[in-house]
Every structure is written in structure tokens, then in C-alpha cells.
Amino acid sequence: MPAANLTAQVVFATITGNNEAVADILVEELENQGVSVKKSEISQTEPEELQDFDLGFVVPYTYDEGSLPDEGLDYFDDLADVTLPDFTYALAGSGDTFYGDLYCLALDSFDEQFQKTGAKRAGELTRINLYPGDQDREKLAALVQAALAQVQK
Image (cartoon, rainbow, N blue to C red):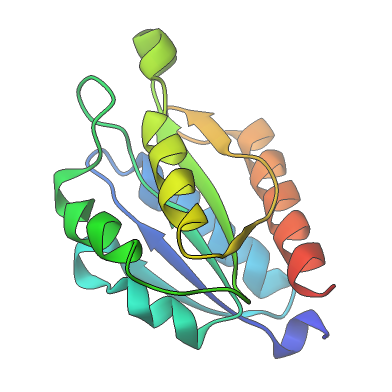
């Protein structure tokens, strides 16, 4: 399936704006590939919406000592009740390496939750330290390519 016929949803949670910047880069990279994209804030989004798309990117932040974003808890909990056997997802998020082992732990939690849906993950969990720079843009472009390759199999 050519990328021009694909649809994607990019769902993000942010406090500092870093994760919205990550989401914006993902949207730009997807649109550059001809993918039709919907970007939405996690508290304004239902996981069931993913069923209307070919692939999805979730961009959560990690709060405090490894916690999920408060505004994303309903989305996270409801995700476990959605069935997505033909769906491809990818995860990226900004964090602060200052937190050591707790760095971007929300990505791991969302990965486990997505596994319950039957969806297939594309690429690696993409962890961004603070605001995304040029190297991070390359990592996010690679994540988009991995997702497109996965969904086009």
C-alpha cells in the first residue's frame, strides 16, 4: 500500500511543550511521505479512534518518578479494552536523563498496554532528552520509516 493511501494518528501529552514538538516532527515526517495525519492531545482522544487509522504514534511524557501523564490515564486505561490486531503503533517521548532509570518510563508502560490490544509495534521506543534537536529529528524520521515499512508489509 503506497504511503499516500495511509492514515495515521499522532496522540501526545505535554507539559513543557517538548512532546508537542516531538509530535509535530512526526506529523511533518508523515506528511512528507504523503500520509494523511490527525494530531490530537491525549485528554481529547479516545483509544477507539485508532481503529480508524492504519498506524498510530503515541507521545507521552513521564511524570515524577516514572508515572504516566495524569491527563493520559483514561486513555491508557481504556487502551487495554481496544482490539487492534491489524494496527501498527510506534512510541516516542521526551524526558530528562537526569531521572536515570526512570527516564521515559511511560513509553515502556504504553508499549505493554498496546501489546494487550494485539497491535504490532514498529521500531524501537524512541526516547528524546528534553527538547528535540537535529539528531532527534533523524531518530523520529527513522521511526516513521520503520512504521511505514511495517504497515506496508
